[in-house]
Image (cartoon, rainbow, N blue to C red; front, side):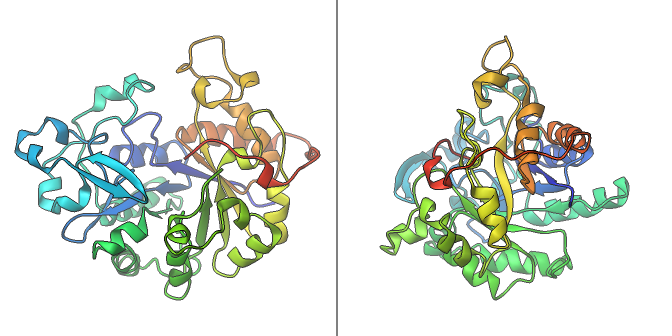
Length: 349
């Protein structure tokens, strides 16, 4: 059986402010096989790594008086959002901002790094992965997500052309390249399937529907994509699905049949998101400490890996590596009784 992949979710977001070169480098040094950047576009069409188009929670822009007038309200995939938006800044302007911890109430230790790192471009992340591959003596891959692709396309800042150009310039547009390209939308993955040689991943939330399907009046939800017919359709353009972990095992410990169904359709399963803190763990694996103290995240990950999950997105990549090692020491798994993945709904990425 192929060893499951450890994907550094936004780098090593449990230890450094997410989507910074420091976070990505630490992820690789902790053993991550892939570095995962969320890609958005600047006003001048440069792909950079940020969690969302709104950058007020991930940079110090709110404390920069020269940009105060750029605080606006926009609608992103149907949600009214207030703040500062990446597409209203050129790369030169964005270079003046510094990254901050997105969830300081959970990861107070990370706030010690606020202001120390900039916002990286996709090209810089590709160069970092190449450098670390040479230095560490193993391949460090990249796992970019096109973030809100329909939103950016409507602004005239489509994410796909610069993504393709960057991968090709780095010699990574080939079937055996250490690259996966992911999206929560459907149409852009279908289009990329005819333009890129790398494997694609259909991300699936625990509820709701892909933004592009909603905009097109398509009534299908994410749950509809997980039916046997839906999975067969995904297999026509993607190599894997990236489901919310609650669609595989819900917080009450009930196991769905999603992994088996996906494998039957020829799809790998890369589940998200695994975090060490008690607040993100099932009740039986929480430690005696508070919600932000670490619990038994290795045990949670091991449960998923025993089910045959092919990859895991981890905020703490070393925890994923430890779980993979623990899996190797376990006997052949006994898979619990399953139920339909459409019945297991919760959480968000």
